[in-house]
Image (cartoon, rainbow, N blue to C red; front, side, top):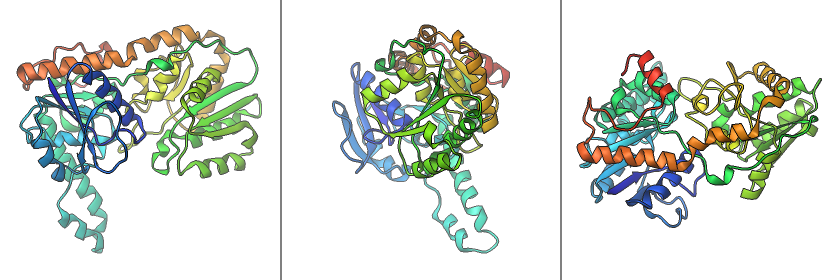
Length: 402
C-alpha cells in the first residue's frame, strides 16, 4: 500500500500533533510504502522517513503537489486538509484533533473579505466570515472523506455536531504513548505533595491553564506542604514566573524549562500527581493530550478537567481525579480530594490502564482503516470494520448518529 501522509505539523516542530504524526509515520512505514508530505523550510525533518517538504500550509497552493503524488490512499493528519477530500484523485482518511477543525488554519478564503477590515461598521465581520468560509469548505470535504478519525470521544462529538458526520464513517483514533514512558514507580511516603505539569508555555496556548494551578497552589499552601514543578518552555514563561512571585509561592514552584529524555522521565517518577486542568472554549479545546497518558504510563495519577478529550484516558478515582470546572478553586478541591485518597492510587494499576494506548494499537487501527478504504472506499453508509470503543458507541447513540 502506498500511503501519502499529509502533515504540516511534523518534527522538528514540537507539539502533540507532531508527536502523533511522527509515531504513526514510523509505524506505518515499517509495513507500507509511506511518504510524509510536510512543510517547506521548517528545518531538518525526521530521519529515517521518506519526506517531501513541499507544503505551504495552504490548500490552494498544496493541491497541486499533492495531486501529482503517486499514492494509493491519503492520511491527512490535520483536519483542514479534509477540504481536499474528493479533489485529490485518491481516497482520504482524515484525522480530526480539535482546533484543526474548529478554527482551521490551512484553508484559504476569498481575499475580498480582507477589505472589510478597513471599513467602519463592518470590520468586525471579517474574521467570522473567514471562519464560516473555511468551515463550509471543510464540511464539503469531510462529507467526501472515506473515513474520519477523531482522536477522542470529545473530538468525535464536536465533529459530528458541527459537520453532520456519519457515525459509520467515524472511528476514534486515540493517540499513543511511547514505550519509554512505562516506568516502575514506588508511591512516595507521606510528606510534601509533589505536583507536576508538562506543557508548552506559549501565550497562544493558555488553555493549558498553568495560571489556575499556580493560584490553586497558593490557596492550598496555607495548610499543605506542596511543591509544584512546571516542565516546558515558551514565551509565556516569564509571565507565569512573575505570577508565582506575586502569589508568594516562588519558593514552592520550580520552572525547569525543556528537559532531555532522562530528566523528563525522572520528573514523572518523582511526581505524586500530574496536574493539567485545561480550559476549553468553543474555538479552543484539548482534543486529547498525550501528556496525560504519558504520566499514566509511569503510574502517576492525573488531575484534569472534563472540558476536553483527556476524559478518555482518566478514570475518576482510579487513574486520577476529574474535576467539573477548571478554575483555581476547583483545582484546589481536586488536589485535596486526591490527597485524602492518595494511598488508594496504585501505580501498577494506573500504568496497566495505559497498555491499550501503546502506539502499536493506534498503528494497527489506522492500518485497518486504510485497508478498508482501499478495498471499497468505505462509501457513505458503509461501516468501517474496526471496532469502536464501547464508550464512543454509547455517545454516538446519545446524539443519534449511529
